Image (cartoon, rainbow over all chains, first blue to last red; front, top):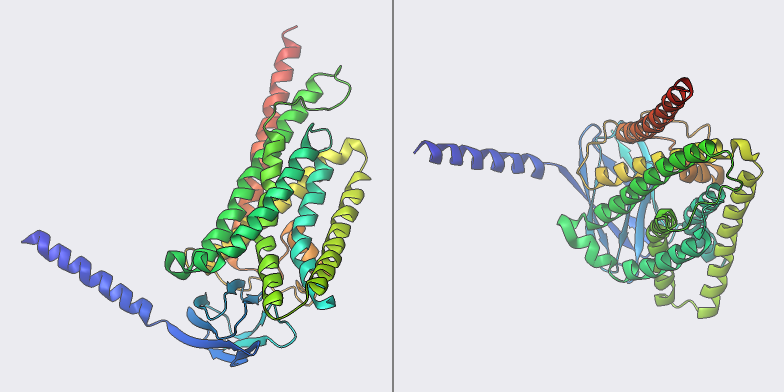
Length: 110
Length: 278
């Protein structure tokens, strides 16, 4: 009986833990026409933020940001997650390394 | 075509600087040219394979496969470079023991050249696979083979020039100081790679960043500039580092330097004992 209570408490804790993770702020970022949409992303400072990146182009793109310390290659029509933060307030640039002329963006943390 | 050349140059720069540094630091290791050549060939082949399976790797590990793969490549290089440093230290100690040895040729049969080959391969693997993906993407978009080849060749030439300049620069260091200078350069290279590996583990949500932007020296030297990029590759310079990057960097330098120092002092004690027992 005691074992069951402990097991249930454990499962609840895990569930709550997952709920906390799921409460992470999520933002969608689309790559299309070798540009980012939106080009400026406002996110809350001080918390982890999940960027869900959708590469809608028929070609590869690399999400690259020295400011955010992130780099990730996306295949054509592939989606993926880039987790950033907790960020101090400020502006952080990112770009599409394979199309740097058009694919530029910033994350503004407030 | 110029755009292609520039992007290929950036991807090749990291590998060529590392190869230039390693070549300069390992003169006297027999068989290294052959093995480093094998490392380069293996690295290029591996980069092509990685590029082919890139999207499959990405979806592994809850979508963090790419990050974990990049971190692994970097940490493998860190371990091998550390091994190399300790091996060089041991070798230097042995040379100074045997005053009669004329050259500093390392006898063949040592594992060292193979280790160098793998380090070189790892250096090419990461950015190399990105370069292959980039070229493939250009081909998909309709670039001609001629355009791609020309751009690639120009970019590679640029990268190789940078590596050659580094090699020649280090080669001018007087032989007495060469071991120390190249040793420090490789130590900082290793620490920089450890800090990069840590960055990928943060991206994979495995490690905490411990604060973004511990300092901001982008006004002084931006990582986007050529010099900034070169320093980023060679000594791990980051203009806005995360706390964990600084931690990994400092820890790598401290641990390796400590072990090398202990080796030196054990040798000094050994000699004092040998001298006083006569």
